[in-house]
Image 1 (cartoon, one colour):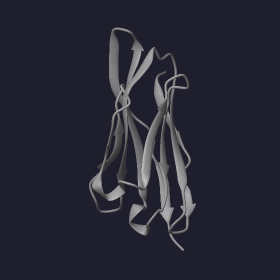
Image 2 (cartoon, rainbow, N blue to C red; image 1 turned 180 degrees about the horizontal axis):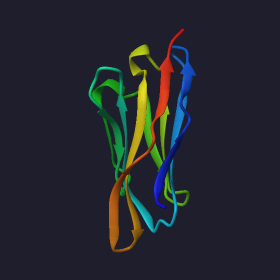
Image 3 (cartoon, rainbow, N blue to C red; image 1 turned 90 degrees about the horizontal axis):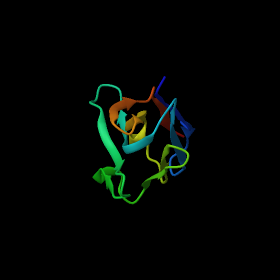
Image 4 (cartoon, rainbow, N blue to C red; image 1 turned 90 degrees about the vertical axis):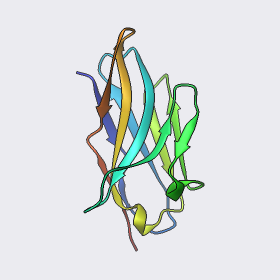
Length: 120
């Protein structure tokens, strides 16, 4: 079964850092574009960062200069390094990626979500 498995969330103090990981599992030919979204209570899910197959990236204005998205194609994993965390970064973080079970098939998948809480 093809799926995305997230890890790395938790509780951190303001100014601290966390690294989220999103690993594709199952029979995967390759991973296409991947991104991280977040959803805080009472708010809509928003795109935080995205990385494309060529390595280009996109960041929401609110996280530019603090978050870094990266990928390891051999491990079929996308990462989100979060530095200088603020209380307003608290949310459930979801990864989303285009997975290719074969060279000719692909689909968009979501991870299960991981909670990030920034609080003193």
